[in-house]
Image 1 (cartoon, rainbow, N blue to C red):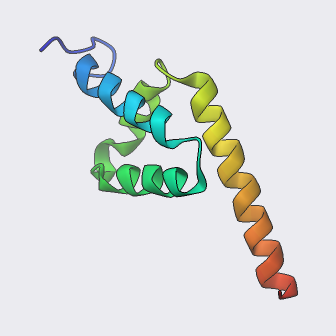
Image 2: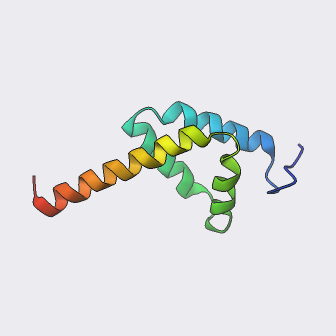
Image 3: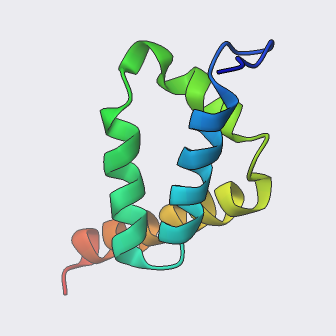
Length: 83
């Protein structure tokens, strides 16, 4: 398998991960699954993998992070003020 010169991760592995994320990103449950997938990546290479994924999916990643931020803010607001 050919490695990317920039980050050392096999491009096919990154492409498969990007495809999985793009399928999951459209639902709240899918976003939670993405977080679980990311948590399974070893911590010492997690940032590098996420950076390498950016070459595949800038728009989808932006949607995910924006949605996650919005959901987290909403949850924190509910937690702080009560139901």
